[in-house]
Amino acid sequence: MHRSNSCFLLGLILKCLPTAWLILVAQWDVFGHEGPDPRCSWLFEESRLNGNQLKSIAGPDLRCDGEPILEKVGKGTSVRLDGLSNAFKSEANWETVRKVLPEDALTVSAWVSLDETLPYGGILSAFQDNGDAETGWVLGYNQNHFSFGLSSTGADDGDGKMTYLAGTTEIQRGKWYHVCGVFDGKEMQLWVDGKLESQSDAQKGKILYPQGSKLVLGAYSDSNEHYVMSGRLSQVVMYDLAAKPAWIFHDFEHQKEWAELPPVLDPAKGFEFLVKPFLQYATQDSIRVVCEVSKPSSVKVRFGETAQFGQEVQCNSPDDLLHTAVLTGLKPETGYYYQVVVKEQGGERELAPGYSSFQTASLPETPFAFAVIADTQGNPKVNGRLAQHAWALRPNFTIIPGDLVDDGLKKNQWVQEFFASMSPLFSRVPFYPVLGNHERNADHYYRYMELPPPEYYYSFEYGNAKFFMIDSNKKVDPQSEQYLWLEKELLELKQRRDSGESKTLWTFVSYHHPSYSSDEDDYGNLWKGKSTWGDLRIRPLCELFDKYGVDIVWNGHIHSYERTWPVRAGKVAQENAPVYMITGGGGGGLEQAGPIRPAFQNNVKRGHHFVYVSINGGTLELKAYDLDGALFDQIVFRK
Image (cartoon, rainbow, N blue to C red; front, side, top):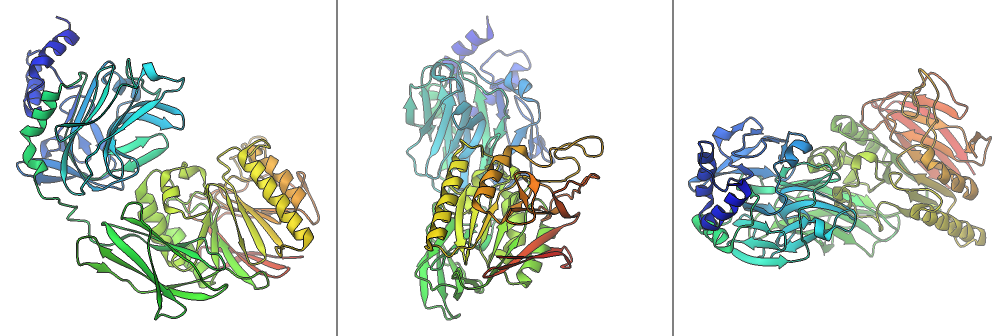
């Protein structure tokens, strides 16, 4: 008998049997028994874990990015995921994994307990969901309910189209649930604790898989997203059959006592700040305070012109963990003190650390200063030292021209590296970032940042200066959204200046990839041949800078320091032209200038560094400091 027919017939008989029996059947099959073997099956127990390697019962073995932690649950075991790094992925290449994934029908089930919910959460997946390109499938959850997404050939609109089912059970943190997604080639179903909660006939035919992906357990993960589960998993199984209702119900009933256990959150995770309070987007009358805590909480911010505070505001929280308070009604260029107070939901514990301070934005006639630090990626020891040096100079704010972290998809890099090391600076002054290539346009960036929409490009004013922040990963050609926006903004600024309506004197732009660079090998190997002397994709923006009188452009990407002469239309000018600066020495592995000196090059240095800018009316002082806090470059601009 052909295996698919035998599986179907035996499946009708065995649908009502519990998972444990099906696993036994799968094991007996090795010795000659023909039955509905799972395509993939994983149990989390000591005998199957070797370090961070998980030996499967069926299907590919998996590797954990971090250190897996096993926990007893009744008579069984589970694995605890920390929400930061320890998801499991297939080590085999996609072509190999693809051969074991179901095509005509699918059942995927797991026991799940969540410490934290996310806008996009994954239990088990093999998919890509990038813009309109939607292929594969994912069993997961959102901030409130479990979910099941799938793409099929029958609904293919050219690059794939997924349908997402959402359940109705309100997820209670720490509680165990049995979650099951089913597709029979005609209909999708989502089951929670043995009950059908959602279904759709929008998908038909074979499952449509991406050209490349990974089989991932414990994370919502594709090429540009990676959100690790915080919670526990057990008994994850995948079949190339569509389970009948009786099987799903009995599979739940077999282990129903887990669903009746009292909720238990991670006992090793204390009640603490995951991300200590930091500041964003200061205006003359407002500022934003952001923090993330380890357990569901309510948060308020006390603030005032003295440490006695006198005012408070409740934080807005989309998920009870990440909190933002918008402090309004403030006075211009005024110092304030603030304290973040966190109270655990359903408990008596409270976090009320010492207070910090901030200043609102300066008026146009008042001197101000700011720091510029790019490419802090993956080196908290270095960027932490630079942050301390910068804070010692007491800037009003900081600009970061991209690559805040080494891999924007990994939450642990945001929590344990970037925010942890930069906290002494960012708890006192707001920072204004742009996206680098290493952020990978990850949702973590948009989740943490509190910037004007759409957040990947925006502008802000401070004192007598205006700053335009651009995402150079996206299109910047003359027909692009960002180019047209920037041209409109620069024209309006010029008109307001000419009419006397605006007191803005200085204009700055920041984006990640440099328009001009003498780096040794990023734009051609200068030890052997020629260079394009920067990223040619960005050069169309330079025409706007020339036309509308941009003063300085700050970039990163190259992990060294470079300051050009004034450059207009690609040629060095004496004055009245933008100066381009690379300030990429914030932590990434160091690079250096090539042996051939281009005409635009003024000063270069290999070494970790930051830049400090002070403005007083028409005078701008720019200084560059190395990792030891020693001055190595300075220049004064006057208008």
